[in-house]
Length: 148
Image 1 (cartoon, rainbow, N blue to C red):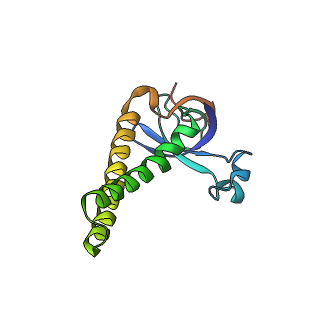
Image 2: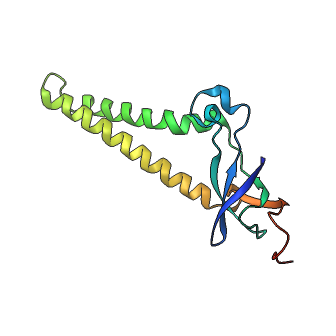
């Protein structure tokens, strides 16, 4: 999906781009971005040589929102519940140690799934087709001093 934003900072071959909130952001209530009119900051590759202050087109890879919600919420919940179930399965629940084992294994399952998801997302982001990148300069801040 293509979004328009303004380059706010440059760091090597990457640029920080401020994206204005969308109309759909105001109604979801999941964060305060749309309500307060705050811009979302995103780091993007800068193959076109955009400079600070330039208005640019940014290509953001899209992802199925249901899949993203499952990855963010569902998998960690499954890890927590699966670990707790293993704790109750292998340790008697009628003793305090059994409940403690269920809690400990539940938290361990949650942490393990979190680490796996984090690693998977890093690998996904490393692939070229999944990177956020600037695809064009819509308008330059100033034409003087710009290179070719």
